[in-house]
Image: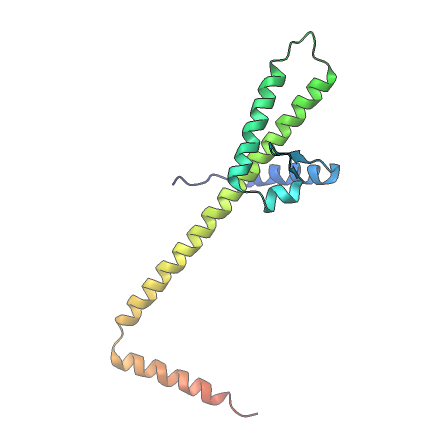
Length: 147
């Protein structure tokens, strides 16, 4: 799997668009008619559904851009700008979620490697070293008994 290249600039742009959507109360409607606000998009929507939404915005943008310029009016341009902004937001959310998944997988892998390394270090200890460690643990426990 390729490394996710979600930069600080991407995150800053995501924050700007998310806050804008939050304060304007905008929502995105899915193909199935579900209405999603920014909280839903960030926390409850899967990457697959977000990709479907992104593709729907791409089609909508293409359709609006191909509108006959003689019939198009200001509302068409407004819809086009909103669709582009929403597509960018959804795309950034996808990148953010993939980045979080990658970071979680790396942390899990790191923990597994550290566990193997500690087990290997422990297996290389001599019996005298193990005895000293256990005795020091026992002394530490005995010191904590009384007031």
